[in-house]
Image 1 (cartoon, rainbow, N blue to C red):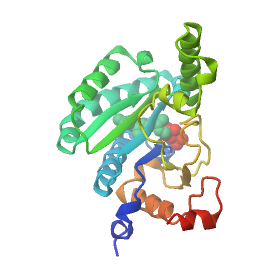
Image 2 (image 1 turned 90 degrees about the vertical axis):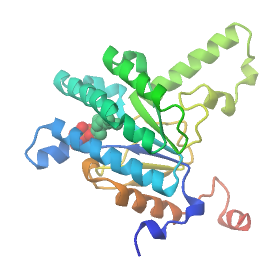
Image 3 (image 1 turned 180 degrees about the horizontal axis):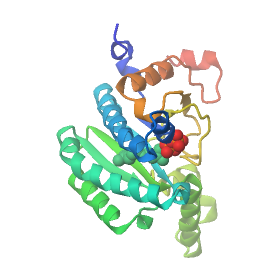
Length: 249
Ligand code: FPP
C-alpha cells in the first residue's frame, strides 16, 4: 500500500512546521558549492508543498532564513536572498494554480529592499487563495518574536489599553507573528540534527517532534507522508493520562 493511502484523512495535522536543514552537507557530498544545495532545496520545498496540499494540511511553515543566518558569509546570504526572489517570481503562478496563500513571518523589514518588495507582491497576489497557507519564516527567530511581543504588550500597558493582569496565554499568542495560525501539531527537522534552533518556541509547546537523517534536498512528498504517519501513530496526551485521552475517543 502506498504511504499516502495509509494516512488517516481525519487525523491529518492542520499545521506542520519544518526546519529545513542539510542543504550545505548535501552539496558537499556531491562536491558542489553550498548554493547548489539551496537550489535543490527549492525543489524539495515545491514537492513538500504539493504533498501537504494533497493530504489536506492547512498550514505549512518553513524555516527558510533565521536571524542567525545573517552571520553566514556574505556571498551565501546574497545567494539565498537572490534565490528567494527568483523562486517567488517563478513560482507565483504555480502557487495560484494550487490554491496556495503565501504568508511570511519574521523581521521582514531587515530583508534587502528587492526581496522585501517581491515577497509583499507575492503575498498580495496569492492573498485570495485558501487551500493551504505557506508561511515562510524569514529573518525569523523565536526570541526576536518574543521580544517584539513583550514590547508591544508593554506599550499597551503603559498607555493604559490593557492591565498587566489581562495578559494571558491567548493574548501572548495574539501578539506573535503567528497570530491567527493554529499551533503546529507536528515539527519536522531534517539532516539528523536534533535541536529547535530558536524556531517557534512558544507555538511548539505541545507539538510532536520528528527528526529524520534525510538531508533537506532529498526531502519531499514521501518523506512528509512518512512523518505524518509517524505522528498518527503517537498518542497526544496534553498532560493527561492515557485512559482519559482514550475515553474522549
Ligand atoms: C539549511 O541548510 C537551509 C537553509 C539555511 C536555507 C533554506 C533555503 C532553501 C531551502 C531555499 C530557499 C527557500 C525558499 C522557500 C524559496 P544548511 O545550509 O544549514 O545546511 P548544512 O547544515 O548542511 O550546512
